[in-house]
Image (cartoon, rainbow, N blue to C red):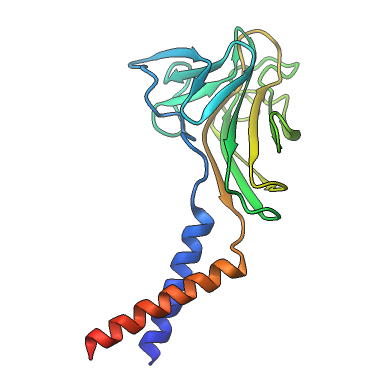
Length: 210
């Protein structure tokens, strides 16, 4: 009996962790093929998962200025001028909190918010400002990728995540990579479903053992 109790607990823990840690972002590390090779870059009106909202477009760089935090490619939104991109997220649980994580790298040591990036969230794009990265430079970040995290609340089942360049309009801006959005908590109903599935599986296994 102890074996089955432990097995049920293990199933519940595994299933709950899986639901909570599933990344809801499409192409969060910008590795989906856009035709780049070697050390190169391109500007696009849309890439898999992301759509340009303003400016020249989404500038994807392949290990040009810095080495990507994940894979080989990352995004710089100050391409010719400040631009923004968004991703539509559907099937969210209304009233639940979600954890956003992404990696940021300053490009220059200039002042005046040269590497600024704004993060917005809402039921339409761009939504309301959630995080403003301003006045961070290569010196202040030790010329490294820095992880940024914040909690987002789903007021609707469909929400929009927007990244916008907010610094000087000079074609030099901060980089972003490895974006993820995960559910911060699992509802009781989800836990009940997992418990039921786990219990049925264990009963089936016990019957086969007999």
